[in-house]
Length: 144
Image (tube, rainbow, N blue to C red; front, side):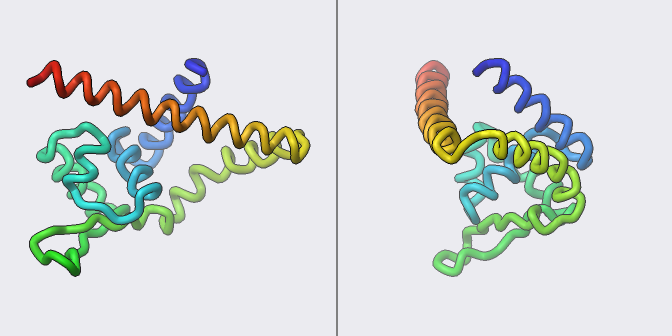
């Protein structure tokens, strides 16, 4: 699992560089893709980045059209970040070879095997989320 994790991180770093982004920028956009529109404060908590760093990150992403700021209809003082990156042609072009290779890989497995793989990935993702929460909690305690 560590090897796959390392290769995933390295792949993401290379994708970010090919798009002219910093790795934290790309991770943040991917988080927004998963969560949907959220506030800058929520993004700060999810990434572990300081609010000032998130503000600069949002400015960069907005400038290149990967996110847009939108007023919160329930609280006009709050700004919601809306992901726009999936509509960018260069993003689709960058991920297309990986997507095609993964489709080819998946086609070599039976439906039952794919169901098991999907189940495993779902459970592994849950374990990783819990480990992230624990690491964040212990980091918060040690900085207090």
